[in-house]
Image (tube, rainbow, N blue to C red; front, side, top):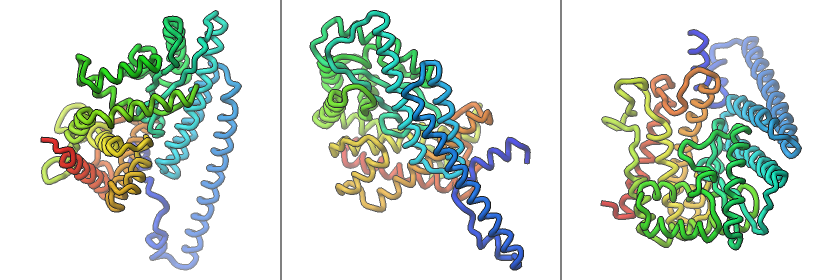
Length: 405
């Protein structure tokens, strides 16, 4: 086994501590003592590593408030590295989500202040109206991972007129630039306030949303996808009350205009899964990704999308996928078995999404979406297949409940 194969194998072995009985069943007493001592030393070393990571994490986070524009990228990279190493040790999806989301919110807020200072120095007077930055996508769902891009919008109060529009155009240009410098890649889909459709006053946002839900816009497909993205909008910085008002408006419109929600449900239930003949895992038969499948598009995204649909239909305000499942179980939309199965599906699929990102970061492969299931242990491969079967059942339920033909 060469070095690359060893790393690939190591990154796939993250299922907790070994069963000691499997190691010691053929050992004599001296050998058992040696094994137990080794395990004890390993646990002690891991505990020390976790303590050091926590200390370094706290120190780096504390430095954000006083950091310069040039320092943010280094801080961001170091925080990402800590989370990567911690994940390889403990394999906690929820812990990585929580930590990455928290420090990226702080980085984004610092960028907002630096941009405001630059605007002031350049002679741009801040209008006397509130404004807020909201995130969407994985950040909006508080599901940040090791590789991130910008999924932000800006909303500002009414009454500022053209002066406010002009100010926030310039503000957005600087914001996107500063965020990129800090390690937030530009969104390839253009979901950034530098684009006019992702910034505006509250009245402008209301008109924009009404145009979408009433099917008044020409590009129905794009507007439908924009509305889906907006479903996960979450406050990051600025005026929280204004941000919450916009997020509430989005959910209310989706809930009120059933034909829009029906269209979203139809799109969600028609998302393809990587399931083939006899419900085996389907993989590409040729080309660059022969023997692989797109884990994001053909497994993870359908899960997130379909859970989102039911959450919107039930009028839930939360955006996090696991929290949505928990709330849906609590209010009776999901049985405990269904909720448990969906959470298990989310954990296994997200775990391998993160592992693929680590392989890209480590230079093992160039693509962070495609997975070869046959490089995994049989048990892990079966977990992924079971996850997709669970998602398929959810799609069928939504399809029937919304009476989609």
